[in-house]
Every structure is written in C-alpha cells, then in structure tokens.
Length: 213
Image (tube, rainbow, N blue to C red):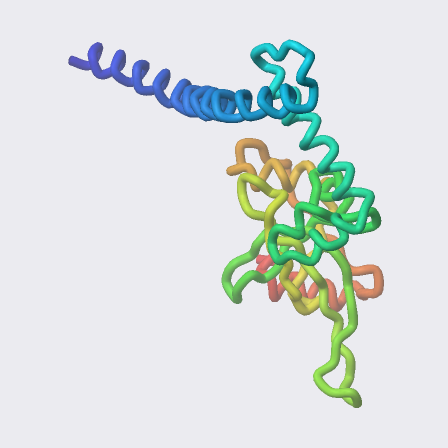
C-alpha cells in the first residue's frame, strides 16, 4: 500500500508541475487563434496585393503594441495615461520611479515595529520631519517600504516614527533571502544606529526592541 501511495505522490507532483504550463499553453493558443485572423485581415487591407500567411497577424499585433508603447512613452498620450488611477502606475514617464529589484538592492534594509509585538522587515525609502501644529516640535518620520511576499516588487509604504525603525547592516540580498520563506538566511542580523544617534540612545532603543535579552 505504501508503494502505491508513493507512486500516487509522484503522479500528483508531476500534475502540479505541468498544470500551470498547460494553462499557459492553452491561453497562448486561444490568443493566437483569436488575434492572428484579425491581424491578417488588417494586413490584407493595408497591403491588398501581398500574400498573407499564418502568423502574419501576430507580427502585425506586435508592431501595433510596439508603436503604442513608443507613443505612450514620448507623447502627451503617456502623460494623460499617468493620471489614470491604478492603471497610471504602468505608464511612468521619464524621471518617475517605481520599485524594481535593482532599486531594492540599493536601499538600506531595516526592521521596524509593525505592531507593539511584531517586528517586520522592510527598506528605508526616505526620512522627513513632521509636526502636529505649525508651532509644535518636529518629529522624525521614516518612510519604510514593506514588500509583499513572494513578489517583493509590489508592496506598501508605511510612515513610522524614527525610534521605531532599526537599520540593518546586512546586505539587501540577505534580507530578500529571509523574506523568500527563509530558504537561505544570513549568519546573524547586524543592527546599526542612526548617524546622529549616540550609543546610549541606541542601547535604549535596542532594549525596547528586545534585542538585549
């Protein structure tokens, strides 16, 4: 009986591997069957004296998408597209930034208090002063990028008080490895103080984070 269970496990493992590949192939085939005839008709209308073979329609659509991308990137159409909620994030113009793996690798990783009892990994985007009133004393806020797992490139930005954020001396690559379900972990986490923080303040904050126990 255990032999048959083991073979059934192998069968299910193969099924799980091929299922997404099969779905992608079926979707791609449906797209090809739907778009190619329309593209062929368009090419026949533009070039009535030329023979149009199978696959010509797909080439036509690739060219249409390429020209559309150029127009969105270099004309006023792209500027309008950036103003559309949600969709506009896909049409960033020159000088605008979104999160990429390369940008993430150049940010400073950190651990911050997601809640009073939960420490979370993130990356420091920027630091800025804030005050409750015009005459009030400013406080330091840190904008922290909190990634979704496993995509990492989609995430949220949290504004945390500076004292609730601990910088890490580890490389960003090491933090990414931890977030990918801990399949690979650094030997240790290196907590470092802020540039303007004296050792006594750092020790006090480390104790608040429970790092001195």
